[in-house]
Length: 241
View 1 (cartoon, helix red, strand yellow):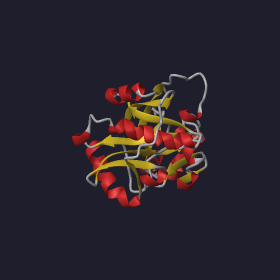
View 2 (cartoon, one colour):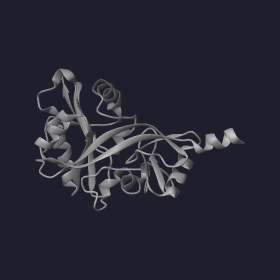
View 3 (cartoon, rainbow, N blue to C red):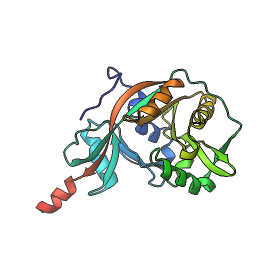
View 4 (cartoon, helix red, strand yellow):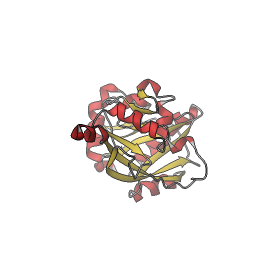
């Protein structure tokens, strides 16, 4: 197993944000067995282990997902015994070091009644996974034009003291107007009002998004891998039985 980090010399709560959230502020969304946890499957697709180098954590994850089950996890490029890496992508984590956060009078709070519109916009813009109850993870704000949702952003992972800004997306017909920046600033305003600090993730190959986030006050903190792994030990036992 390997992780590439800009600050690998010491551990930090953001090194394993899903675990910190699932065992902290988001524990009410968690399904957990020992050293492994995941969000309810209609809330978010994320799974986490307490320590990717601890065999006990992988045993607990195997019990959580069941025989042949899959789990998207961070920080893993080589699967431990009993697991197979199905695919791997690479991302970056950025933290607020100078973001000007401010409310925006044109933004509206989104709720469960807005989920069909949110899912439609997400499907067309692909900012990352968004499920039926993702909106419950934190505050989601949108901008409407003539009643139609044209941009959104909101809060996702919530490690103690931190909140991730996620699902930042704009309808292609309305890009170039600064809507994403306005929404990020507005979501960040709510986070900072709670005394917390914003952070976010982006695909490592999304240079435009990374450049935008850095230009408004985020700093690259960490590069890491995100892998989908499949539990294979049970299948091997069945074949040899």
